[in-house]
Length: 222
Image (cartoon, rainbow, N blue to C red; front, side, top):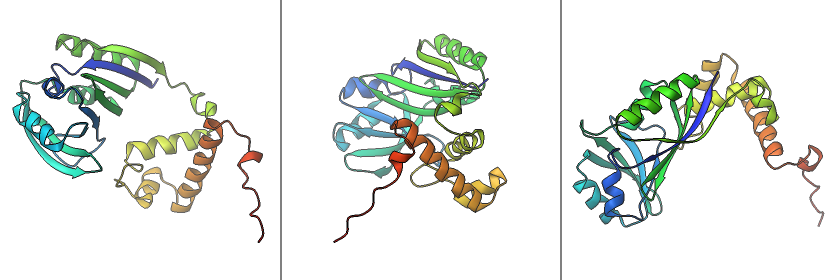
């Protein structure tokens, strides 16, 4: 059964620890997918100059390249050296999918989807062996009934998961709607309608409003 684990780990030993030692105000956020041999990390807090000075001095970082910038934060393609424990590679080896990863004050918070709890346990052991002792903040199974709690049908749930996995919601998108529809074996129109219904179900569920409340009021006449 699919499991979701929220895990905290210290940045020490991950290749980013020295960055936080040098600039405590630093915040990091992982870019889910980036076309490179390294990892995409959005870095913010201090100035770009301070960030790049710290990247240059960090012994665990082999190389870095600026990919993009966005209003006071910068996306770098970062490659760690062989002496550094690559946490993200360990997650991939355990068949895990990183749903989100961010760090501040020297601590990473990772939300990871696994095929089963055995994979969670295996990752925990490997991190512990690498002296990166993790703390499991939350661990739960995605039961078959999970999607109904959000008002989604099984197909809508599966479609949203597929869209996330294939990068449909990334900016920029990593897969087109046509490509995603072909992956799911449905028409472009069917996919569009299914996504719209799923969005509506999620919004009404999360905002705790009824279907009647979601109907837009008539526009006032002049």
